[in-house]
Image (tube, rainbow, N blue to C red; front, side, top):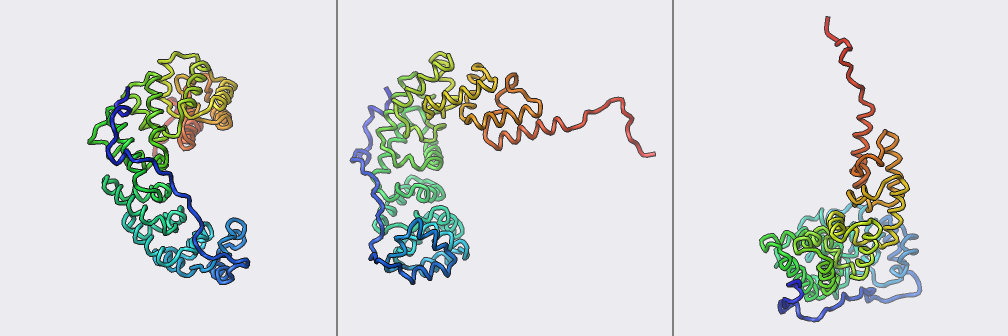
Length: 376
């Protein structure tokens, strides 16, 4: 039995789980007519008013609004005119934040992202994470201090704040609970304490949304995988490769996928575990998706033995498989007899493989009896 199941959590992890707060509209007065000053100010900044009306027209009815203050803050950080327009068009709610809120957010974000140019880049991608409700400020500050106490890189903390702002808006106790569960799992599965900070930092960087999941889900899923026959070392490998997404799975869903894969691929339980370790993403796909992809591969002339040897090919959609098979065939590569590695991988990987095949075909052969050109 996993030690993480029996080991008691640290005191701050024993507190009850608290769900993330619901983000509400700012407390400003709503009028029947649009706030013409807001409309004119946004128009002067080249913001597409029609787009704002269509997607978030309620903002234009709010009073007061702080368009010039939002512009001043963004320009003070180094944003140019087009960047300001894009930000306010994407997240017009920004103009409802008071100058005091904007100033507080700039100071807060400055503690983890001191470079103004980097901060502008974050705001362009995640404006809602910066222009947020004042009611979340204390939770944001407490969570920043907590993650700094874990000695996480500032860049990682700013990425967490930007891509998963709900995790910073919720009380710090929830994040403490989940982080403690992750650390306990890592150590219980044989991870080295000296490497735990790097492991945690990488996991949170790759999947910041893991902080929004109930810790109990992680424990249940690891226990289920243990019951399937995975060793502690293999579970640690899975936890690292799954990038924390194991918290988004369920024992019942994984059971259905594993049962289907075992029967469809005609392999033993031991071989199935090896396939999952080679292709952890297999755990995510429903049986219907795997069935469709298997039919697509078999229709292309690929046999089950090839798929078992290179299971990561199941990560490709049927459309991608057919497209790549045709392109490889055009240059004389037959996936029915060759390795599926040529078919596998990301778009960049495939283009590199395709480029090598193209170069090999177009390169002229050397004729050993042809006379050499020499200077007379």
